[in-house]
Length: 122
Image 1 (cartoon, rainbow, N blue to C red):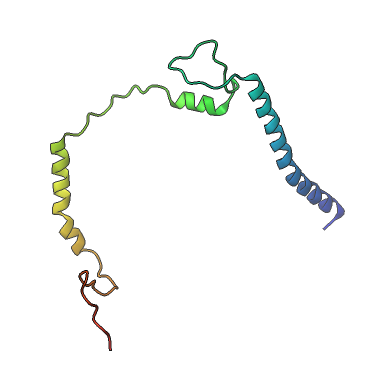
Image 2 (cartoon, rainbow, N blue to C red; image 1 turned 60 degrees about the vertical axis):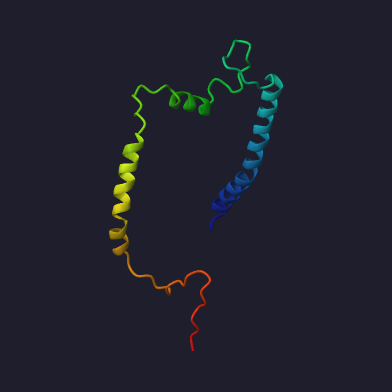
């Protein structure tokens, strides 16, 4: 390994160790400044111009949530009637024996009823 490779490897290692701490300190300073400038958070049914903005205008999370939380223009589906639910459940229950019959046999010994003594192997 040449001296240049060692230098860049050392530089990369130092950057990897120090950048995490530097970003943590920078984030803490930004958060402290935001807390000092913002008023106490509160919940209202409607916003007003007096409400302090909790995030910057270019907050990526707020923008993503604002765009994805737009009101839907698609019609909602009506709720299923109880008769339809019962009919579907009945059809499923009718096919359970067929489905169970197609399953492979278990490798475990058959279970004894609760309270019954297990047979002893000799």
